[in-house]
Length: 165
Image 1 (cartoon, rainbow, N blue to C red):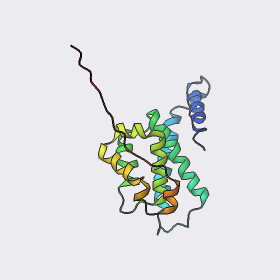
Image 2: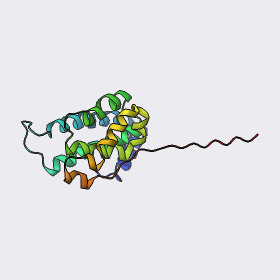
Image 3: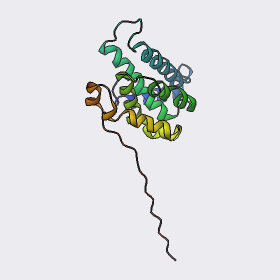
Image 4: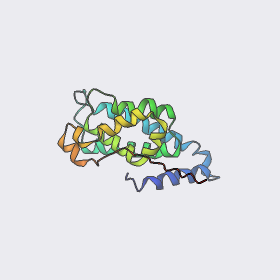
């Protein structure tokens, strides 16, 4: 699912939840899909680490992972992902590992590209600094991953105050 089709899915789910006939079947559909996407994301992310007993992941497997990441990013923006999940589970699973693997970096890039402002509001600034540090091409261990990432820099906010007496 591409980033442009995600809003259509969310609109459909919202319409189904509000429809008088479908609402009995679609109660908390956003929350159920969100929970399922989060579980799939954590399961897939762990399975695709090198040295696991599972077979080597295919491009289809990574496509499924990135689809879950895309959906999770949108659900974070919509408020369906709990603060604790964002702060204590999602970002920590991607950034605070001894070795951060390419699929984790790609997942982090998708999350920050779609819902970076929401993540920044939810987590400590040091966590966002770590995320930005990981996504700098100069800090990546793999040239293949570095070629596909956008350059990230932190936002510097300057406030000018005019005093007129």
